[in-house]
Length: 239
Image (cartoon, rainbow, N blue to C red):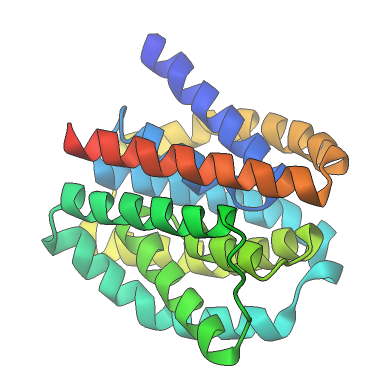
């Protein structure tokens, strides 16, 4: 019962973050789901529920999507997806998570120091490729997008809409890839089904919170979330 309540709490908080910020579900959910499930199960549950959230919200946000940027992300992510599944199958997952956590902490520090990033076509493609790789390997496409958008001072509405539109594509492709190469099981789909009402409750709460967030608070919240995730991943991997 404690595990079930913890699972539902994780999903609720992650859903609120996803709806209010546009990126929080995978960053919040994946590290904590790894406490309750095997890596394959945690990643696929995260992907299924994230896909559900993207489908539920995208029609409301379509006017804010940067379609040029979205196209670049999609094209480059297709290249990153197969590399991610290779990492998941053949590379020690703890070693990879340590690398991800160190990268998160280093880049978060750069953002806190107000390091700016100039958006370019090539950088758009690089970020999309990294997101594709991270989705199939650890189920977390958000960090590269979040770091890039924050460093370029992207307006929060555009950030949320463009990332959700990209997630709609990358999560679907990643779920298919995961099932083909690693399989799936009954626990994954049952857990995802039970979590659906909690997801929609989180969506409702998150929409309310989004209206209260100004750009400054949004940035501070971003730094806290990235730092926490990086530290948690590092501690979990080392233990």
